[in-house]
Image 1 (spheres, rainbow, N blue to C red):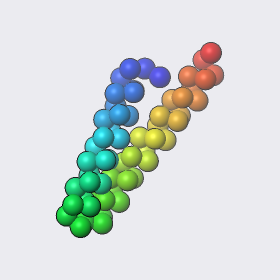
Image 2: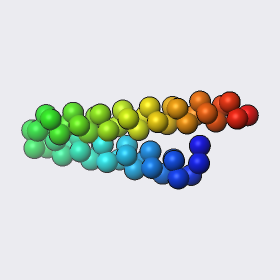
Image 3: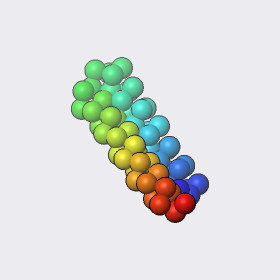
Length: 57
């Protein structure tokens, strides 16, 4: 996994956490769910990159 990919995935995860927190604070379930979805996408991308890295070794 390249550094750019790691930074992008981390940024997406943080964006999701911020959205989730903002949604919770405002009682906006839709925004909270969007934040959780963003975090899930970042986690899936991280897992895919980890699998690629495992096969490179």
